[in-house]
Image 1 (cartoon, rainbow, N blue to C red):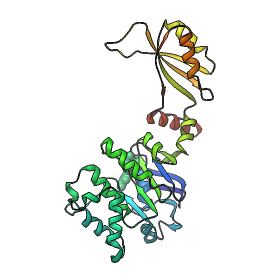
Image 2 (cartoon, rainbow, N blue to C red):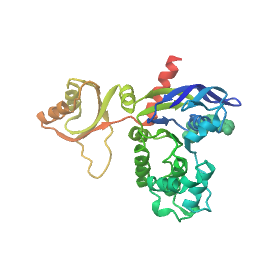
Image 3 (cartoon, helix red, strand yellow):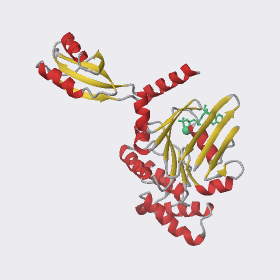
Image 4 (tube, rainbow, N blue to C red):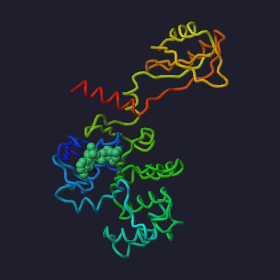
Length: 320
Ligand SMILES: Nc1ncnc2c1ncn2[C@@H]1O[C@H](COP(=O)(O)OP(=O)(O)OP(=O)(O)O)[C@@H](O)[C@H]1O
Ligand SMILES: [Mg+2]
């Protein structure tokens, strides 16, 4: 549905996007993950025909973004960064207006607007003034305007930014439910977010793609070993040694104990790294139990987005 080949965009000396290539299948939800200034918005603006590329090619539904922008725009719904809304209009007036601008035939307009109002959970907000809505509802109106001409492709630039946790859950659910029916690209800074919503993730850093994979594979690839956090009530060197002896354990590193009212001098914290092939949790628990120490806590430690970036970017530089 979307094909991007060797796309580059320069702003003066800055190469905002550098030889980026990727494909999105029909009905797929693709995540664009990257830190500030990575080139996410720039790539999306090129795909939506708001910005010409310096080099490379991009097609949407078989139409060229550069030579057939009208055909492309007809098929795309776009939620830009910081969505500009006509704040003095009522929600239904605004969506009617957008439908008209996007060329939805007059006869179909009312039906199209009603459908997106329903889909975006805005049916009870039709008479509210756009400018007076809460941020979350304004974001919903932004998504509704992107959907109003029933586009095959949706491009959403940070759809959950600035929303409260409840609204984030709702917007994520809304996007997730589009999988299969629409092709979606969404950008985000948040790894768990793309993990939840997307079938595939493209990690972009300084204009370059550093990884494209499913969230599961990405995690597996990045997390060479599993890491666990343990708190054990027992003598430090003996506990460390015993845990090291569990098959599959690669390393046991003592950690600083969190200070607090309940801090006990005999309780120690550890980070246990194990190979990915073995689940060592049962054997760790048994080891502690058999020696009559106390297992007070055991939980997986997962990599933060920052750690993943550091790892990917260093790998990338190592190759270059
Ligand atoms: N119109 C412009 N003129 C000059 N430089 C620009 C322009 N638009 C973007 N840039 C630069 O291109 C680079 C990529 O910016 P872009 O907005 O695509 O990043 P982003 O991944 O969307 O970041 P964020 O997460 O902060 O939204 C940045 O260095 C930015 O300063
Ligand atoms: Mg951006």
